[in-house]
Amino acid sequence: MQRLFLSPPHMSGKEQTYIAEVFKSNYIAPLGAFVDRFEESIKRYTGASYALALSSATAGLHLALRVLGVGKNDLVLASTFTFIGSINCILYQGAKPIFIDSDEGWNLSPELLKKAIHQLPKKPKVLILTHLYGQVAKMDEIVAICKEEGIYLIEDAAESLGATYKGQQSGTFGDFGVYSFNGNKILTTSGGGVLVSENAAWIERAKFLSTQAKEPFLHYEHIEMGYNYRLSNVLSAIGVAQMEVLNERVKRKREVFDFYFKELSAIEEITFMPELPNSQGNRWLTTLTFKKTDPMMVVNALEKVDAESRPLWKPMHLQPLFKDADSFVDGTSERFYHTGICLPSPTSASNQELLRVVEVIKKICQ
Ligand SMILES: *Cc1c(COP(=O)(O)O)cnc(C)c1O
Image (cartoon, rainbow, N blue to C red; front, side):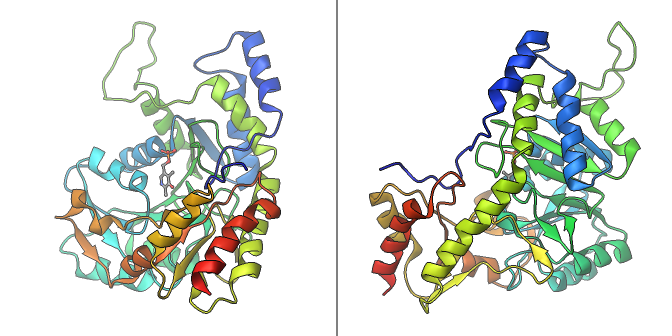
């Protein structure tokens, strides 16, 4: 019996061929042809005009804030129901996160967003919006509010590569979008991220900052502080191979969700994370909430059959790190957190293998 992980790496089979090409060229590091190819593949797939391959999505979010001029004591709005990677970049810049709760769709509430903007003493500069578990947020409403209020939008699409809203790819609605290729995401380069934008000058500026802010002289001249955030040619080669199977991976992630839904949705106390009309999430992780069962009991029972599951993200406004931060919350994400779990959602496993997850949950809930 193989352990069922939440979202383990799933290679396409082409990775080693491309890595061999990299070794043959001896462009092991840092840059090389595969970095360009990886960026091209992201642009082609998502429709974004400009892309920058980076060492992580966290680095991409940080660069986006730097480029947008977010600095000390600036206010940055953000989804509270997210992973810390969305938020650390705000702290790197000495800015202040303001947390916004979810609505019944699990993603950021446009109503609370509006309320926050109108009640804050100072105008926030940026919203960092997470597409949670690969499901797209209410983009019509959120984009309209950001435009109207003059607030930059950065989409944290770390979990949602391949997800669409009205046919448009997540990550391409905002001023910037960021995809993650961390080990547990729908695709992986073992670690990596891609920053996208429609603004050529911004991506050029992010590229400059990501390579130690070297002025164009042979002797290494520096006027500004930079970072070492670029992705290597070897890891980009893995990325190119992974992008070739993105459609298959999204399809299989959605089948995994459909399988769990078919087996478990009849149980009265179980509610799955919804999908907005006109959108198609990538169902990175299948997630659900229970009405009365303690989610940790299910997590522990699944562990006994060697299946990995987890509670949902603990909202940021509940984290000790942010005990002094302002937040606009109404208990929604907190309720999800206390009642929900993520199920093992590997694209490499068969429905037959997932059956043991279903059986454990049925036994507990029926
Ligand atoms: C994984 C993740 C990140 C961070 O991605 P890295 O590539 O590991 O830096 C950021 N935000 C969310 C929502 C994530 O799930």
